[in-house]
Image (cartoon, rainbow, N blue to C red; front, side):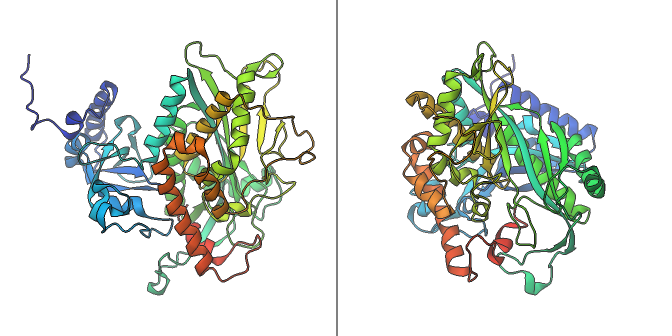
Length: 492
């Protein structure tokens, strides 16, 4: 029997018990893959509060140690808004968070989840791994959105269910004409790139429009398939240069991880090939059509593996209560489903992006769509209000907490809106500021996410909205401004 390691000799992961046995095994497989595939570097990345990947790239020789001891990053990354500007006084006592670990821009540690390792098909001899984040003392960072989602899934598991999600994501794919790399363009945030269209749009699902954009789609499709992502379909959308990718249903955290890697991969592959992919909801360009992210969801009974929403007469009682919770908390959840100022330009009456919390059966004019005929084993709900820039960990967590509260409160969703808007329904927020106000006041979300996280996230979004109010000198009234274009076009 080999001698035990002393506590001082144990790795960071061992000292703080941060991996399961399966993750430890996967770490060994990463080391073998590096040698087998002759990888030269590995990117260690984490998803920040906005769902944007940040990280460091390590030489292959350093990866074995970094897997077990982590990679340090500055805590100021957790203090930033969508312009990458710190909005907390990080050099004051507690760093503006009331936490010693966040004070003075101290370090936190990225700890790889070895199960997420991929070889990037578009980058030479490059591996990639998604990380969780902890403080140097081993305590989990309370602002980790991946951990927030995992906690929501754990709460759901204790109630006897697993979460199943299918992703249906629209985005714009442009030809990059001018990357705006002149020094004068390097403002903070930088000037938005100049782009042109790949199609003129307005021929929804026509094969001719698809074929026009297929050379670019092919590059993306092959990259995503090489990553092992569960891609299901690629489609031409109604707007100019607008496409939609859908994915097969996944359980738990996998769906959120897929969305994170999908967005990052699409943007990187596109840029390397002279295109710009943008998950900004509605770019400030002539004739644009808004993009959405429809989240298909259901609950599976953990023991029986049965879809808990199925019922011979339609949606089950538990499914109705879950739906009622999503509607009751829709205003507060908007801060997570629609986290940018730009996303609220999409909500319109009598449209495919409704402006109120209402539901219907297979009805594209409502917020929540009940999918599946009575008794259909694939019965599920589709939330149609999300924007493609949403942080998937927070989007999914918001659905779980809202749905669980609906089940606990036995919240009936009310009658189906077979003809939208003929009945009274709560209006969704008309701005990010209004959504954040609703979030702060939502007791179920303060309990589920934790009051400290809600206040943290609301503070960041308040800062974003305040900059917009101060710096955007254009008339708004539903129009997309140049401020939004600089802020979001290339970020998301």
